[in-house]
Amino acid sequence: MTGIRKVLAAVFVGLALTLSAAAPAAAQAAQAAQAAPAAPADKLKLTVAGDGAQGVTIQATHTDGRRLEQVVRLVLTATGPDGQRIGPVQLEPQPEGHGFYSSGPVLSTGTWKVTVNSPAPLQSKATATVQAQAAQSPPAPKPVAVTEPADGGAGTGWWPFAAAGLVLVAAAMGVAMLFGRRRSD
Image (cartoon, rainbow, N blue to C red; front, top):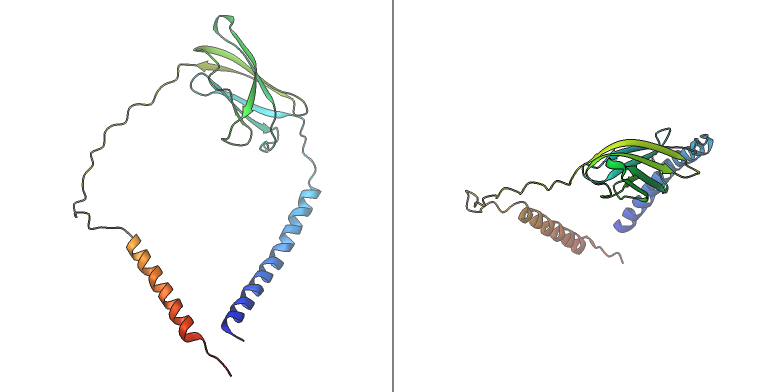
């Protein structure tokens, strides 16, 4: 049997062993998922907070703590200083994570009573007091002085060693391929 055939046989045996070891675990996980009772999915837990500026953030989870996997339509209404009213504003999910919603800058400066509703089948309602304030800009970065290394740039890093290693490995494989072939007649 040639060397290539031995390597291929070893790879196939390893693959077969891996698959046979993983199959019982996958079957057990599938049985556990089928046997688990369905959790009540008729309500959500809504956590409403200010975003530090003029917006509102909402984290929606199931009442039992599971994260929200599907998109729900949340509606925001708010009453602010001097009786100002905002909404209803439909909120869209944000890319920050499952169940995370954000209104963007919809509030003016002041204290607001914010209510968020979710319709059926995951019906819920949450109310919170949010302090909206003008958005703050970050401080200007301090200038950084650029200096040359004390060794005059002699430290070139790790990449020349990595390149040399790759060249040596390729050369060793080439030599092995040239001298490793034996013909039997």
